[in-house]
Amino acid sequence: SKAIGELEREWQLRGQDRTESPLVALANARNYMNLSEFDSSLVWYGKATELDTEGNFLREVPREKMAAAVAQRDSLAVQECITNTIGNSAVTGQESEFILALRWALVMRDQETVDLLLQKIRQDGSNLPDRLRFWVAYAYGWRQDRLTAMTHLRVLVQSGGLSRDLAESQRAWVLKAIPDFLFLEGQQDAARQLYEVMAGSSLPRLASWGHYQIANLDLLDGRYLRASEGFNRICEAKRQGSWQDHACAMTGLASEMERLKSEGEPYGVSAFYRP
Image (cartoon, rainbow, N blue to C red; front, top):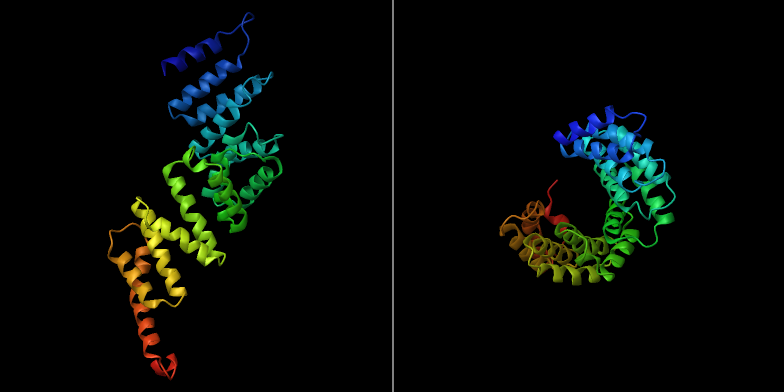
């Protein structure tokens, strides 16, 4: 707060021998940002943009201004920042802004903005950094465009991006998303191989999901006894996620389907139903 006071005093004392400085405006914006006074920060970021006629802070100001707008939850200011980001000539140099913009649009479930961002990245972004590629893949997955999402995920894995710039939760999502997308696209054998690897993970939540999906695949393949045993194992294990409720419900159903299968049911399943 003392730094802000000094900087604003200098701003007020400027005279003929002083010029309005984008650096001072940026420093004020950052100080207000550090104090979580995001509305004041936005004012100073706007001033810094206005004064930066030489373009010395073209990377810093747009990125930090968008972050301040998101922190303030100022939808209008965020949308203005996103519009400016999309309108600039290239994705290169704006990767952080695109990541923040995608995350905001996904949280707000703003499909139109997500589509505009993806279109811009598709047009101008050929060599994406790993962190941006992750969010692009995530956005395509959210849009139910699983084939395009898989294309980005394969590049991410093959480039070694999982071990570089992604957080543990993001790496876990990638490892889960690839077999899930294969499963949903009907490539069940390939999905099973990856789920079996996942089931051996040292991360309990990831391992639990792998076992759960193997049980689902067994059910689809008509291996009802194995499916029932798998669902039951997930149901009784330490809770890792909401899918365990479904596993508990499926345990009895898979067991009953195994009974019907083993008995042959010469008259068909309809004989079990009464009008």
